[in-house]
Image 1 (cartoon, one colour):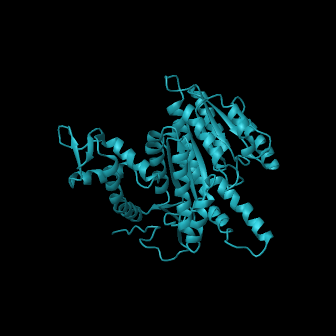
Image 2: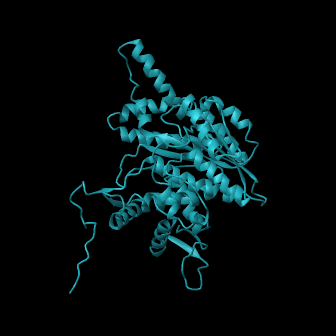
Image 3: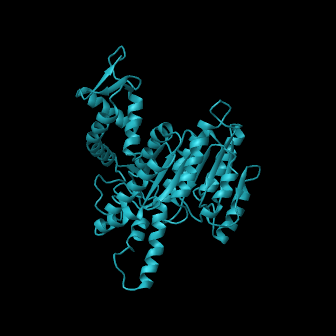
Length: 429
């Protein structure tokens, strides 16, 4: 007698109340990325080799309380990780970025790998008080400082004076367009260009559009004009001196298509940072809440001292793996998960088709001389500037197709005639 095995997942669920795409708050995704990147940052730069340091810094400019009443997305992620299971970690879903950093600092200290010095600011008096309490519960023996409640932009000079020229990771989770100016971001770029490090800055797409939306060519009265100028000045300070001469006409052009303005302002901000600061590389990553989100509310803009490894290798594939987590369905109990493999593969194929012509254009400009395939992939990731759009493996597949199509050429192939990451390639002239 045969037994029919019934799946709790329909092939094509018709009842939207029965299944839902896993929804994770943008904070959970952001914290997972920071968890992985702080670890990579400390493992790469912390140590006794000539290019390493015994001390590293982590600056959390908008720290909040340090933890949440309820949370998701950390414990399950850590429990399923072969890497993190090597440690006796106590990461919790409720951990905010300050507690994640301190718990990592404890791991690094136990390994005698590096001393991670943590600096936290929070301008709200009550949140600052709670941050002190939450940090003190786990921070014994660790190097950290919670500044008196004040705005980050007011505390920045003091913070910079205490970093002692050690490599520093800045995490500025500013909500909206206030809290840090373009000139202050450039001062951070000056620091990391000399001392190594990265900046992670939350770019709130929709808040940018809301502030821009208060700008008009005429106002009904002086009161309305004054209020509008206050908000638009905040946006100008974020995007840089005299940026209003660029963003105001662009807003008037796109005001009926706000999403276009959001995309334009993000690329404009990245362009100005790349060209007017001492960051050696600038890129961004989307923070999505579901796999088919066509209008994310947030991006994280990353400025780096060493973009080839930090952005082109570590972060790109971290973000790609994070995006893959969006392609899970949960049943209503939350206990059973199904990976939407067809949807995931469809997205990858669509992105490959979209990005391939751009890659060819970039190679024709940037790949006139021989470079390794590995470095060419990094070049493409940095030129595109959208971290995690595809994995390095997927980019390699595109290059293999370009080689098969004689769009690129290679020299000194392996004994089997295969194109490897170490082979030199260039675009066919």
